[in-house]
Length: 239
Ligand code: SAH
Image 1 (cartoon, rainbow, N blue to C red):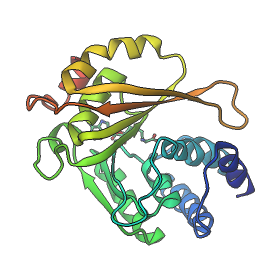
Image 2: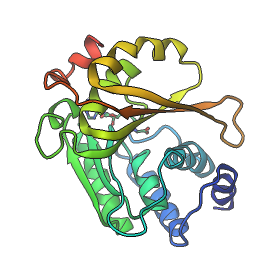
Image 3: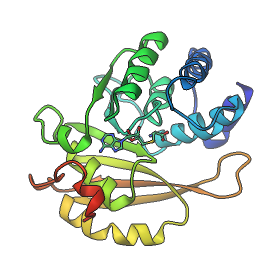
Image 4: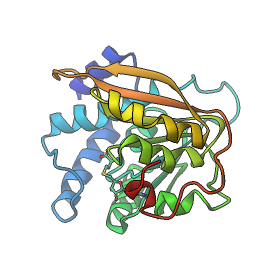
Protein backbone atom coordinates (compact mmCIF):
# COMPACT_ATOMS: atom_id res chain seq x y z
CA UNK A 1 0.00 0.00 0.00
CA UNK A 2 3.02 2.29 0.47
CA UNK A 3 3.57 1.84 -3.24
CA UNK A 4 0.08 3.16 -3.92
CA UNK A 5 0.57 6.19 -1.69
CA UNK A 6 3.97 6.95 -3.20
CA UNK A 7 2.72 6.67 -6.76
CA UNK A 8 -0.26 8.89 -5.95
CA UNK A 9 1.98 11.47 -4.31
CA UNK A 10 4.23 11.49 -7.39
CA UNK A 11 1.22 12.18 -9.58
CA UNK A 12 -0.13 14.84 -7.25
CA UNK A 13 -3.18 12.78 -6.24
CA UNK A 14 -4.38 12.40 -2.69
CA UNK A 15 -6.43 9.56 -1.20
CA UNK A 16 -8.97 9.79 1.61
CA UNK A 17 -7.88 7.80 4.70
CA UNK A 18 -10.43 5.02 4.25
CA UNK A 19 -9.37 4.36 0.65
CA UNK A 20 -6.36 2.18 1.48
CA UNK A 21 -8.43 -0.47 3.24
CA UNK A 22 -10.91 -0.42 0.33
CA UNK A 23 -8.17 -0.95 -2.24
CA UNK A 24 -6.92 -3.94 -0.22
CA UNK A 25 -10.46 -5.38 -0.21
CA UNK A 26 -10.76 -4.69 -3.94
CA UNK A 27 -7.62 -6.74 -4.63
CA UNK A 28 -8.88 -9.62 -2.51
CA UNK A 29 -12.31 -9.76 -4.22
CA UNK A 30 -10.78 -9.32 -7.67
CA UNK A 31 -8.34 -12.20 -7.22
CA UNK A 32 -11.02 -14.42 -5.70
CA UNK A 33 -13.48 -13.87 -8.56
CA UNK A 34 -10.75 -14.01 -11.17
CA UNK A 35 -10.47 -17.75 -10.56
CA UNK A 36 -13.98 -18.25 -11.99
CA UNK A 37 -14.56 -15.22 -14.22
CA UNK A 38 -11.97 -13.85 -16.62
CA UNK A 39 -11.51 -10.35 -15.19
CA UNK A 40 -7.80 -9.55 -15.43
CA UNK A 41 -4.56 -11.05 -16.71
CA UNK A 42 -2.67 -9.02 -14.11
CA UNK A 43 -2.57 -10.92 -10.84
CA UNK A 44 0.51 -9.81 -8.83
CA UNK A 45 -0.77 -7.43 -6.14
CA UNK A 46 1.97 -4.83 -6.90
CA UNK A 47 1.03 -4.93 -10.58
CA UNK A 48 -2.65 -4.53 -9.76
CA UNK A 49 -1.74 -1.48 -7.68
CA UNK A 50 0.15 0.27 -10.43
CA UNK A 51 -1.31 -0.97 -13.69
CA UNK A 52 -4.92 -0.96 -12.58
CA UNK A 53 -5.36 1.37 -9.59
CA UNK A 54 -2.80 4.10 -10.21
CA UNK A 55 -3.41 4.04 -13.94
CA UNK A 56 -7.15 4.45 -13.29
CA UNK A 57 -6.58 7.24 -10.78
CA UNK A 58 -4.76 9.37 -13.34
CA UNK A 59 -8.21 9.99 -14.82
CA UNK A 60 -8.90 12.32 -11.90
CA UNK A 61 -6.09 14.69 -12.91
CA UNK A 62 -8.18 16.61 -15.46
CA UNK A 63 -11.14 16.91 -13.03
CA UNK A 64 -11.97 20.30 -11.51
CA UNK A 65 -11.82 20.32 -7.69
CA UNK A 66 -15.04 19.05 -6.03
CA UNK A 67 -17.60 21.85 -5.47
CA UNK A 68 -17.69 23.28 -1.95
CA UNK A 69 -21.46 22.92 -1.94
CA UNK A 70 -23.84 20.85 -4.06
CA UNK A 71 -23.38 17.66 -6.02
CA UNK A 72 -20.09 16.48 -7.54
CA UNK A 73 -19.72 15.31 -11.16
CA UNK A 74 -21.64 12.43 -12.69
CA UNK A 75 -19.30 9.93 -14.37
CA UNK A 76 -20.03 6.99 -16.66
CA UNK A 77 -17.43 4.26 -17.23
CA UNK A 78 -18.08 2.49 -20.54
CA UNK A 79 -16.77 -1.09 -20.72
CA UNK A 80 -15.79 -1.06 -17.04
CA UNK A 81 -14.87 -4.77 -16.96
CA UNK A 82 -13.45 -5.39 -13.49
CA UNK A 83 -14.14 -1.74 -12.56
CA UNK A 84 -11.34 0.17 -14.30
CA UNK A 85 -11.01 3.08 -14.33
CA UNK A 86 -14.29 3.97 -12.56
CA UNK A 87 -14.02 2.20 -9.22
CA UNK A 88 -10.54 3.45 -8.22
CA UNK A 89 -11.67 6.97 -9.17
CA UNK A 90 -14.69 6.58 -6.89
CA UNK A 91 -12.50 5.31 -4.02
CA UNK A 92 -10.25 8.34 -4.33
CA UNK A 93 -13.09 10.81 -4.82
CA UNK A 94 -16.18 9.36 -3.11
CA UNK A 95 -18.39 12.34 -3.97
CA UNK A 96 -18.60 11.52 -7.70
CA UNK A 97 -21.76 9.75 -8.83
CA UNK A 98 -20.66 6.80 -10.92
CA UNK A 99 -22.40 4.58 -13.48
CA UNK A 100 -20.49 1.44 -14.49
CA UNK A 101 -21.53 -0.05 -17.84
CA UNK A 102 -20.55 -3.39 -19.34
CA UNK A 103 -22.29 -5.56 -21.88
CA UNK A 104 -21.21 -8.83 -20.24
CA UNK A 105 -23.42 -10.08 -17.39
CA UNK A 106 -20.59 -11.88 -15.58
CA UNK A 107 -18.63 -8.64 -15.39
CA UNK A 108 -21.58 -6.66 -14.05
CA UNK A 109 -22.32 -9.45 -11.54
CA UNK A 110 -18.76 -8.98 -10.27
CA UNK A 111 -19.19 -5.20 -10.21
CA UNK A 112 -22.41 -5.44 -8.19
CA UNK A 113 -20.70 -7.73 -5.69
CA UNK A 114 -17.72 -5.37 -5.50
CA UNK A 115 -19.89 -2.30 -4.90
CA UNK A 116 -21.64 -4.24 -2.14
CA UNK A 117 -18.42 -5.48 -0.45
CA UNK A 118 -16.82 -2.02 -0.60
CA UNK A 119 -20.01 -0.41 0.68
CA UNK A 120 -19.98 2.20 -2.09
CA UNK A 121 -22.80 4.70 -2.32
CA UNK A 122 -23.78 6.59 -5.44
CA UNK A 123 -22.74 3.83 -7.85
CA UNK A 124 -25.07 2.27 -10.44
CA UNK A 125 -24.15 -0.86 -12.38
CA UNK A 126 -25.78 -1.33 -15.78
CA UNK A 127 -25.59 -4.39 -18.02
CA UNK A 128 -25.88 -3.26 -21.61
CA UNK A 129 -24.19 -1.97 -24.69
CA UNK A 130 -23.17 1.66 -24.82
CA UNK A 131 -24.71 1.88 -28.33
CA UNK A 132 -28.15 1.16 -26.81
CA UNK A 133 -27.86 3.02 -23.51
CA UNK A 134 -26.89 6.21 -25.30
CA UNK A 135 -30.34 6.30 -26.94
CA UNK A 136 -32.23 5.97 -23.66
CA UNK A 137 -33.43 9.37 -22.41
CA UNK A 138 -32.07 8.88 -18.87
CA UNK A 139 -28.54 8.34 -20.19
CA UNK A 140 -28.35 10.36 -23.41
CA UNK A 141 -26.11 13.39 -22.88
CA UNK A 142 -26.73 12.68 -19.22
CA UNK A 143 -23.20 12.67 -17.75
CA UNK A 144 -20.61 15.30 -16.95
CA UNK A 145 -17.76 12.92 -17.77
CA UNK A 146 -17.45 9.64 -19.71
CA UNK A 147 -14.34 7.54 -19.09
CA UNK A 148 -13.14 4.39 -20.80
CA UNK A 149 -9.98 2.30 -20.82
CA UNK A 150 -9.00 -0.50 -23.20
CA UNK A 151 -12.34 -0.77 -24.98
CA UNK A 152 -11.89 0.31 -28.61
CA UNK A 153 -9.80 2.41 -31.01
CA UNK A 154 -10.58 6.12 -30.78
CA UNK A 155 -13.01 6.60 -33.68
CA UNK A 156 -15.16 3.76 -32.30
CA UNK A 157 -14.71 4.82 -28.71
CA UNK A 158 -15.76 8.41 -29.37
CA UNK A 159 -18.99 7.19 -30.94
CA UNK A 160 -19.70 5.21 -27.75
CA UNK A 161 -18.71 7.97 -25.32
CA UNK A 162 -19.64 11.39 -26.69
CA UNK A 163 -23.42 10.78 -27.04
CA UNK A 164 -23.46 10.04 -23.29
CA UNK A 165 -21.81 13.37 -22.38
CA UNK A 166 -23.70 16.62 -21.86
CA UNK A 167 -22.55 19.67 -23.81
CA UNK A 168 -19.91 21.30 -21.61
CA UNK A 169 -18.78 17.93 -20.23
CA UNK A 170 -15.91 15.78 -21.42
CA UNK A 171 -14.79 12.28 -22.40
CA UNK A 172 -11.50 10.82 -21.15
CA UNK A 173 -9.70 7.98 -22.92
CA UNK A 174 -6.67 5.99 -21.75
CA UNK A 175 -4.19 5.21 -24.53
CA UNK A 176 -0.68 3.99 -25.18
CA UNK A 177 1.60 6.82 -26.23
CA UNK A 178 2.07 5.88 -29.91
CA UNK A 179 -1.35 6.85 -31.18
CA UNK A 180 -0.69 9.75 -33.56
CA UNK A 181 -2.40 7.82 -36.33
CA UNK A 182 -5.38 6.81 -34.21
CA UNK A 183 -5.88 10.40 -33.19
CA UNK A 184 -5.69 11.58 -36.75
CA UNK A 185 -8.24 8.93 -37.75
CA UNK A 186 -10.56 10.21 -35.02
CA UNK A 187 -10.80 13.77 -36.42
CA UNK A 188 -13.85 12.98 -38.49
CA UNK A 189 -15.63 11.21 -35.61
CA UNK A 190 -14.93 14.18 -33.35
CA UNK A 191 -16.43 16.63 -35.84
CA UNK A 192 -19.53 14.51 -36.41
CA UNK A 193 -20.14 13.80 -32.72
CA UNK A 194 -19.57 17.32 -31.35
CA UNK A 195 -16.24 16.74 -29.63
CA UNK A 196 -12.96 18.67 -29.53
CA UNK A 197 -9.57 17.50 -28.26
CA UNK A 198 -8.72 19.54 -25.18
CA UNK A 199 -5.65 17.82 -23.83
CA UNK A 200 -3.12 15.08 -24.50
CA UNK A 201 -1.44 14.33 -21.25
CA UNK A 202 1.59 12.02 -21.20
CA UNK A 203 2.05 10.17 -17.92
CA UNK A 204 4.76 7.81 -16.81
CA UNK A 205 3.81 5.29 -14.14
CA UNK A 206 6.51 4.31 -11.64
CA UNK A 207 8.62 1.44 -12.99
CA UNK A 208 7.41 1.80 -16.59
CA UNK A 209 9.56 2.59 -19.60
CA UNK A 210 6.93 4.16 -21.82
CA UNK A 211 4.45 6.96 -21.36
CA UNK A 212 0.74 6.43 -21.18
CA UNK A 213 -1.55 9.03 -22.68
CA UNK A 214 -4.67 10.47 -21.22
CA UNK A 215 -6.82 12.14 -23.87
CA UNK A 216 -9.47 14.62 -22.85
CA UNK A 217 -12.20 15.58 -25.33
CA UNK A 218 -14.62 18.41 -24.63
CA UNK A 219 -18.21 18.02 -25.74
CA UNK A 220 -18.85 21.27 -27.57
CA UNK A 221 -22.04 20.53 -29.55
CA UNK A 222 -24.88 18.00 -29.20
CA UNK A 223 -24.34 14.63 -30.91
CA UNK A 224 -26.79 14.07 -33.80
CA UNK A 225 -29.52 11.54 -32.90
CA UNK A 226 -28.21 9.03 -35.47
CA UNK A 227 -25.22 8.30 -33.17
CA UNK A 228 -24.22 5.90 -31.86
CA UNK A 229 -25.24 3.58 -34.66
CA UNK A 230 -26.57 0.07 -33.99
CA UNK A 231 -24.58 -2.27 -31.68
CA UNK A 232 -21.41 -3.42 -33.37
CA UNK A 233 -21.53 -0.87 -36.21
CA UNK A 234 -19.21 1.69 -34.52
CA UNK A 235 -16.55 -1.04 -34.32
CA UNK A 236 -17.20 -2.58 -37.74
CA UNK A 237 -17.43 0.70 -39.66
CA UNK A 238 -15.64 3.38 -37.60
CA UNK A 239 -16.58 6.95 -38.47
N1 SAH B 1 -12.07 -0.99 -18.79
C1 SAH B 1 -11.61 -2.26 -18.26
C2 SAH B 1 -12.02 -3.45 -19.14
C3 SAH B 1 -11.45 -3.45 -20.53
S1 SAH B 1 -11.95 -4.86 -21.46
C4 SAH B 1 -10.11 -2.20 -18.05
O1 SAH B 1 -9.48 -1.24 -18.49
O2 SAH B 1 -9.55 -3.13 -17.47
C5 SAH B 1 -13.27 -4.17 -22.42
C6 SAH B 1 -14.61 -4.29 -21.72
O3 SAH B 1 -15.54 -3.51 -22.45
C7 SAH B 1 -15.17 -5.71 -21.68
O4 SAH B 1 -15.55 -6.02 -20.37
C8 SAH B 1 -16.36 -5.66 -22.64
O5 SAH B 1 -17.41 -6.51 -22.21
C9 SAH B 1 -16.76 -4.20 -22.58
N2 SAH B 1 -17.38 -3.66 -23.79
C10 SAH B 1 -16.87 -3.69 -25.06
N3 SAH B 1 -17.69 -3.06 -25.92
C11 SAH B 1 -18.75 -2.60 -25.18
C12 SAH B 1 -19.94 -1.86 -25.51
N4 SAH B 1 -20.18 -1.50 -26.77
N5 SAH B 1 -20.78 -1.54 -24.51
C13 SAH B 1 -20.54 -1.92 -23.24
N6 SAH B 1 -19.44 -2.63 -22.88
C14 SAH B 1 -18.56 -2.96 -23.83
